[in-house]
Image (cartoon, rainbow, N blue to C red):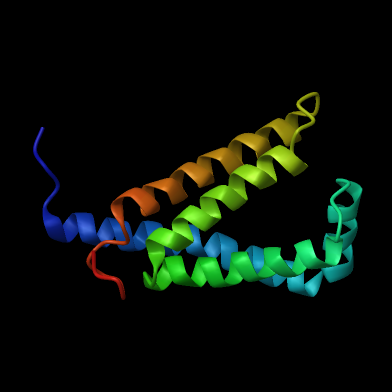
Length: 131
């Protein structure tokens, strides 16, 4: 097996960042549009200060997603989003008797894993950080 050529690797990392980051940006925008529903969902999970959690969630998703897309402080954004995904899985998708909740739990863990890859390996050449 040979190593991927640098240009293909850098292009793949850019595409991966765009796909991963877009998920968070769109989720954050959807939460802005549906603030009442999101705050109610946070409250239903028993978390205190639902409006503060809501504001933090929107900020992490939109700002973190944009940072991943453009590759600015991408390692730290990747770590923040990884922790966010894992916390979301544990706090909101923990009813494993419901198949969709198990799927959401695993999806959040998988996306968190992708974010840990960004943290570990950086955003690649085509980024503001350029590493």
